[in-house]
Picture 1 (cartoon, rainbow, N blue to C red):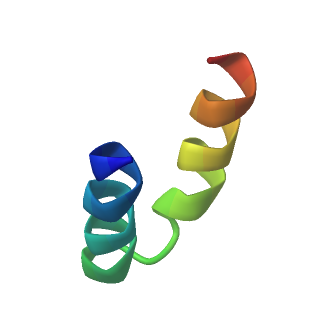
Picture 2: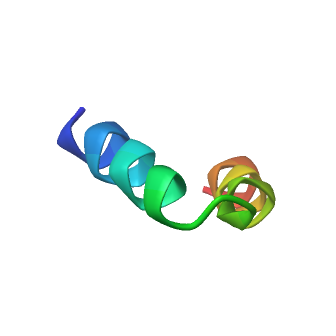
Picture 3: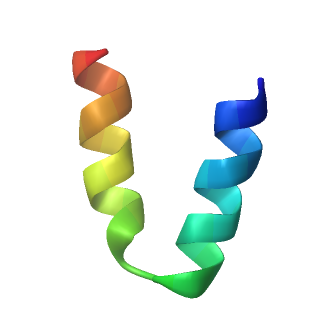
Length: 28
């Protein structure tokens, strides 16, 4: 799950993107 790691790094850099990531994961 390399994508998860990249998402974690992205979330740390952009706090608030978590909501969008959750939506994307829910749609995926």
